[in-house]
Image (cartoon, rainbow, N blue to C red; front, side, top):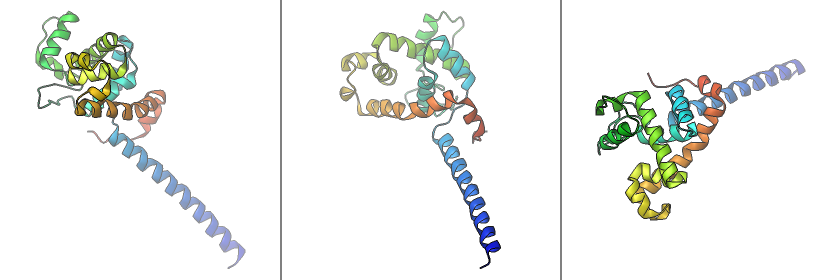
Length: 190
């Protein structure tokens, strides 16, 4: 084989390698966005700042509660992105002095994030650690008090919930630290 042909073959392989690496990176980023979606970023940033929370905490709760589906309703009756129970929503609305509150308002994206963020802040102030606050968010404050912040004493479903939150925190930390990255990855939500 002549030197010119070798040179062209090397250039072709090099370019092919770059294209393959780019395709692999893009596929990985799209897969990451499917597993860890991020919608409503502006609302998450606004309400996490309002209640002095890390936005990745709020996004992780939303991911694990509703997978970013604002119309989600759990079998237990929790509503919206942050899966707020109607009774809890009424109590939060009373604490926030929201006039004309009704359960249907929990389907409003911004209000649901505002109420869920307020409640997460309330639980964090009450239980002092993120894990204990997450246990209370998932299983209720009465159960969290009984477990005294010990995740090993929590229901298996609550243990898994807290672990899933911790799994998603690093991803959302990157999303919020490098906001342009999420804009590069196409959303699969329509």
